[in-house]
Image (cartoon, rainbow, N blue to C red; front, side):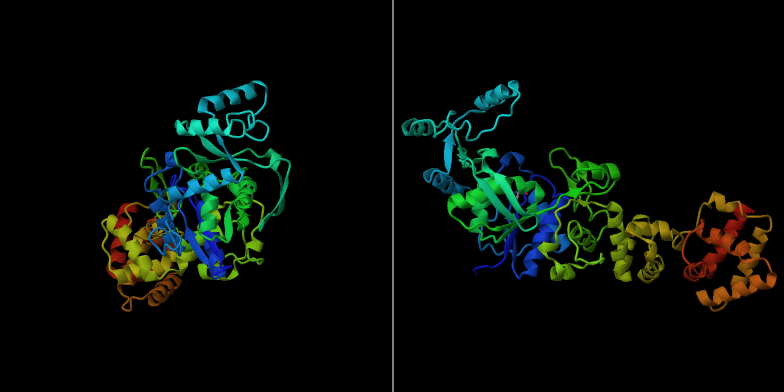
Length: 504
Ligand code: GLU
């Protein structure tokens, strides 16, 4: 089992999963599959104040929708379980104590008020308060108090935290698989809280202990965790454990302007930043998701893969299987990747075209039924085949094809300006020509109508444009003769008569 690639996605269930988190999950998934490894999910729910009901189920559902479900997680191959940190609570205390025992951590008894006062004091001197080597030996800590005093405080139930005793004056030379060599000065770090007397570990302790116990080989996560890297490396050292390899993925940037993509950018520019719809259980606030907006999982996988990675060529379309084959952490770049909502739609257009017409027809039928339109599956399938080239979403279909199902009730005002005095009689003549066609297929209709136009010497535009307007109500839609074939002779003639009545 040694050297097996084991990677994890370790979200905190504090709300819906941001699209950046989905990218992190995807890159972990790809790396695991590429290396015949294991992709697991661990839920980091030690911060009970930020716990949001439903978030965990949302995360797992989102990954399932995208086809990147974990090999191990809650309720699935629980080889290293539990996979929820709140259920591992008892485990962390011994590790915190181990660090105290070997001199890598200390008790701190400062109350919230004490710390507040220290912060204010520093502020008044124009400084920022940092809990570190410069003051830990003067504050209310086990580095300052006698063993007896410490024991008494603990015995009396005085609240405490356990802080990491960051070494002083060392230069850490760390490696990141994406960012290369990075140096950190330990003296600049603060002494982070690892454990609280309420029995809960903080993110840092639980994360390192679990990555170790769950035999994580690589930690692939967002760049926002890079500042935690020195502490994490030091924690591995303090425990005497081999650290996993680290890779910090580049930020996902706003489509316009600078900075990290946020929910507000999505709201402002009208695109989702979440995989699925979400309703906040407390505020009732709704956030829209890619799935419900009509994006395909293939689309989301494809555009996320290209946020920070490419295969070295100009190729842009990648299936999940192809990504597994080609993914390489060496090709992930450091620079932030701009989110491009317009490009994402382009990807969806591509994947929509690849869907089976019959599947698209099923999806479209739901929309048609909502509008009170019942149509044969075969007919809807044919409609879909003629219009899908021009659609980005199934929800675009109706706008592109309403005339296949209902006669126009209005006519485009601008196009109507070309309805001249003789147009109505020309249209009635066309109706007669159509009436006389026996093989009512697009090809025959086209030949007959065009022959007639040529013979009459009226000019194509004078016939075709008002004919389209009569049948469609606007200057849009696919080939007119196909429309005529589809809606049939009787309906075509009826629409021409109506148009003539209304516009003559
Ligand atoms: N729980 C952290 C998060 O919410 C995990 C960070 C990490 O991968 O170490 O993203």
